View 1 (cartoon, rainbow, N blue to C red):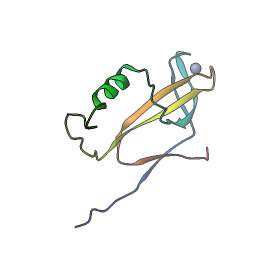
View 2 (cartoon, helix red, strand yellow):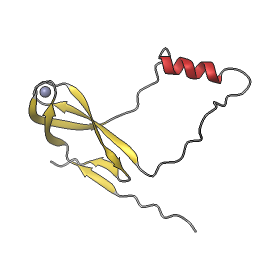
View 3 (cartoon, helix red, strand yellow):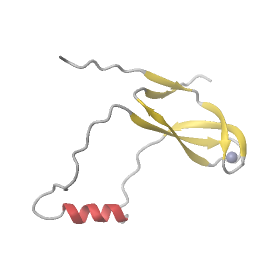
View 4 (tube, rainbow, N blue to C red):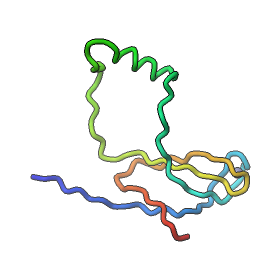
Length: 103
Ligand SMILES: [Zn+2]
């Protein structure tokens, strides 16, 4: 039996009123998606990984990772008052987040 894939999107408004840790009060924030940055080659974990993968085989010992049903969704919020960025992590959800263009 083939598993059905349901793609439901979760709509997020482009402007939300949340707490800003820099201003210490609720202000309007612009919501943007969190993009994956390039790995830092001199980071401790990255160096450890390179040390492990060097040699004859490229496999790293450990548990086999399961494919998770839901994912953690995170966003970046930019304060309209101070202009600083801070992250917001949404709960685990199956739904794919989508920032609506309309206010
Ligand atoms: Zn602020």
